[in-house]
Length: 293
Image (cartoon, rainbow, N blue to C red; front, side, top):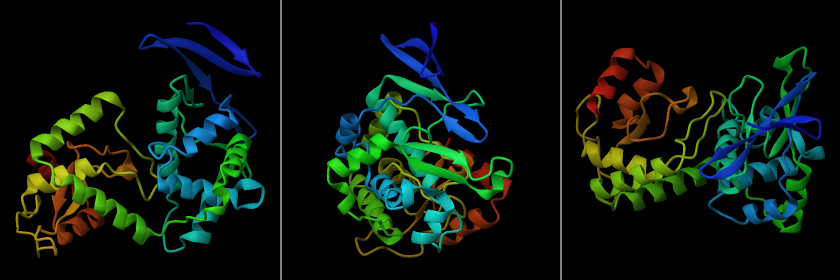
């Protein structure tokens, strides 16, 4: 493996699928994080207009940061401004999934953090602690200059999306309803094909909202067949379309690093779903895990 330095930052090269890839290493100095991110303005412009990369919630996020002074702010500052009803900022999960899509699209490098694990936050943003000696004071995210320029050149800064939770919930349900039209066999085949092509989605503990695969949710609902997979009771009512009302639950929560796939997803009645999020008893977790094996 060839090791070199670019712009004063360490880089190593390796082969992946016949292509030469680079590992770029995050460098920290006095609470400020740096890495070589050579994504051009034109590349950002192309990706911004690709809805398979910049989902609406990701574009909504970067526009919020664009509107901050200097295009920089802590995640909590933005949360308090736009979503004060949330207990925690939802942006860690959004930026994590966005960066996975960006790196997969570019297919030329990955970023290794200071702990030796892959780092994703640093691709669309730069970052530093407000006071590195007191990390609890907050961490500043700043949009990369090339991304800022790209937003301006494609005219997106006038699109003040700032999606509401109600809108996102509605879009998510529409996608699940569409996927629900497929059979269990078709859903499993589709999910397995996606799993082979990409790393399963995970999230961090600081996230509240995540990009969920509607096929995975629809499969859990199909397999439950109208019965709660914890208490075993029928769904409490039928929706207007005649399907049983159950809620999709991840046995290991996404906020704990759980994956959004068919081995971690069940359908519960609202009562049991609430119970899992309030009590989260290990016996119930074990029961649910065994129920989908």
